[in-house]
Image 1 (cartoon, rainbow, N blue to C red):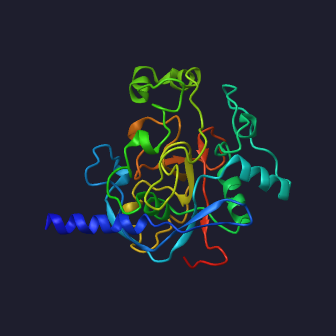
Image 2 (cartoon, rainbow, N blue to C red):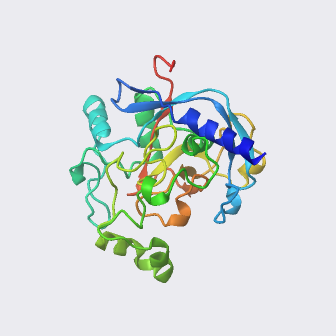
Length: 285
């Protein structure tokens, strides 16, 4: 039985590791085809860090495939969007005077500090949309069942490795939470260029770490107990939206595929980014 289960698991990953990609002519970003399928959403079987709102783990079917941004939306893509639409630039610096977005001078960095509405507006312009929580987690897992799709330092930029020197972000936070962000700034931690860590089985980069990613869903702590088994779209109403994936300033216990961060949709935060999903003109692989 163990051999059979292992073989099935390898088959799932193998299917995910044959990515089909194309460039969306509207925003000039690369998108990867995510085939439909069924997965276990929520707390991973061996994960000891799960919060109550990650339970109960439950089976979810994604009935339709979609194209997903291979990376979070980049500074280059946002500059193109601004040039076409006349939209304003995003903040060039954060509260610590850290250079971000166009202020960082690196078009390959992910954009940050956009609100949920600004993220949604970009995706709509690109002919796409924000993913639901279920679509995001399905794409992030890429057929795997662990709390991450690889060794964290290999796949993600987070507090421990996104600065000038390695640190223990969790220990730093626990020892002095009030100075945590300032200490990260002093260490040079910040957003990193996309595609500089290993991708998951679908060929998606930075699904964990680098920037938190806005989803389309409102947040409810008990939603998993009542959510639909097919294509769940989150609660109908709410005051906060869900972000997924962790970021350059996250402690390791939050950089997990099932972790749910919530935030008011109107905030500008230096670790919040996004990626779009949808159907391109030709959805055939």
